[in-house]
Image (cartoon, rainbow, N blue to C red):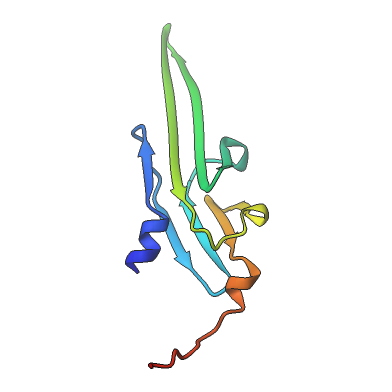
Length: 124
């Protein structure tokens, strides 16, 4: 588990930090970002060398007009998180899906890694 966490060490910037789950399965890694209230168009997902970058920026202006009183509030939120990917992943086949307030990123392992099973090493 220590080796796995080292590859996916992430860092964050700004103050809005959605919760993230990272899981390893036989054929792929999965990253899930909790993003209630955000749509898929709010996100940007990039690969920069072996670094996966997930970000969003949201700007809202709220106006409330009642009895000659006008209130304007500005809301700016941004988020950026980066994950160092291990060499065993196929960065050309990464997919991102957004459904029910969760951004899910599927990171497939390379074929040669997936096909390697348990192998006994002889002691000499």
